Image (tube, rainbow, N blue to C red; front, side, top):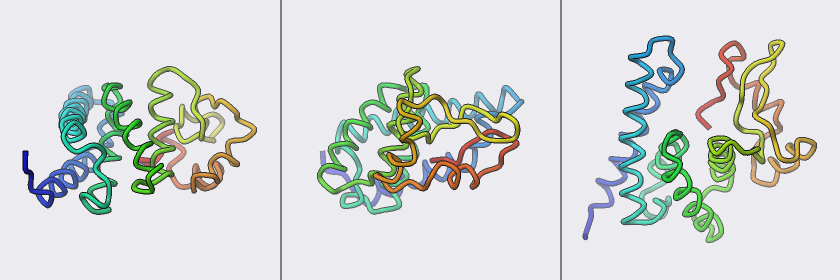
Amino acid sequence: MAYDIAALAEELTTMAAADQRSTADANSDDPARQLAWRRLSARHGDRLGEIMAEFGWPTADLVGEDAARAAWLIAQHADRQLDVQRRALTLMREAVSAGSANARELAFLRDRTLVNEGRNQVYGTQIAGVKDGAPVPWPCQEPERVDELRAEVGIEPFDAYVAQFPVATGQASDE
């Protein structure tokens, strides 16, 4: 099926913008706001699944940098759709190997998917909570090597990373 790539890029960036506007609702004390976030991220995850089935991973070469990052953000937030995250991870891995996607973003998606599977993460990008005022990552496969592994994919050291977001909420950035 022929598809207007410019329209696809616009659709992805529009979904990511809606995601960003409502991301605070993911952990809201208001169940209605949490439900609205879950519905939005599920709709977006479903649509990303359709896009991946038709186009593969939406790389920057296909849809542009902003839309490619938007696709990654949508996959990152498809927490209740492990099938979508796993498919995105596989396709992104292939795209990174071909030089068509961002290794840093792949690392974040890999960690997010591992945590959602109940497994230890690799890069320490996913924060479990706050203890004694300091962000604590979900368990890592090789905690003593986290900064080394992060450097290999272009992620700043853990301490510099967690300094970027509010400690009080225990929430990492969207990455």
